[in-house]
Length: 264
Image (cartoon, rainbow, N blue to C red):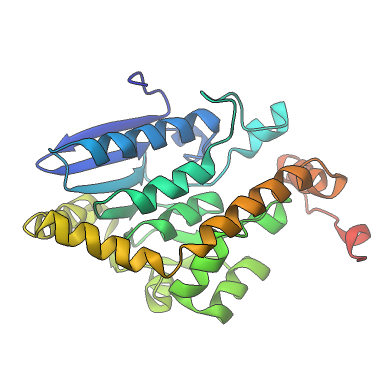
């Protein structure tokens, strides 16, 4: 897939920039976006010209607002994909499996599925205007694999539960304090800072970095299989009245009423 419509891909001096280019939807992803992201990561993986990958969003408002809920409301799903599947688990997998450091350059909102993407990146550098948080329980969705289990490894159990159960929204400085990001810089300096981090890593042995990444991933690999089971559940759950209440309320700009679903 060379004709990208939802993302851009560029390489400069060893650094590949993958940019979600849907600013009118706060860089939320539909199925095509996910397909293109997977392809771009694989291209960076295979390229001898690339030693570090950066993931970011177009514009200055959002890194990624997660799954495109307007698309979900319009068609009942995330739109057509190349395989017929919504390949978000493949996207999570390729971010982890790409044998090169992946840096999230969070330029704005990193919410819901977009928050999961930055968590899965090896490093996160955030603009001081960035915000972080989950959204699933508000819109009838969840991430029961890497997006929650691995998150707990990153920030600790109590804080991970706070992010998911309370849908706490964090500022860039709060995210830094929680260990959710590596560094916060003024928004206008974000790309320059990512470039500097990339340049330092590009001086090092790519094989050493690859093996180190694979070694660190080993401890949390079980969350991948848990996530696979969770996606099966999520597909079934998405068709229930409870999940539909969440997405309908989101698009109608009102609070959802989940009270009738509290029974076992």
